[in-house]
Image (tube, rainbow, N blue to C red):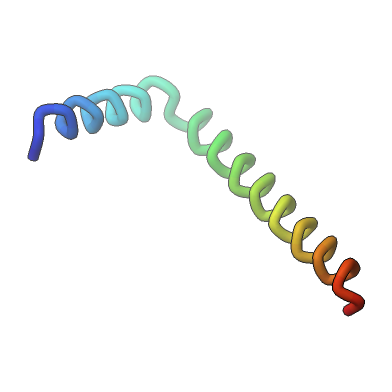
Length: 51
C-alpha cells in the first residue's frame, strides 16, 4: 500500500465519520441523477434512430 493510498483512505474515513448520513443521502441523490440522465440519453437516442 502506498502512502498516498493510505492518506486517501484516511481522508475518506474522516469524511464518512464527519458527514455520516448526509454523505449517504448525497450519494443516493447523485446515483438517482445519474440514472435519470442515462435513461434520458437512451430514450433520446432511440427516438433519433427511429425506434
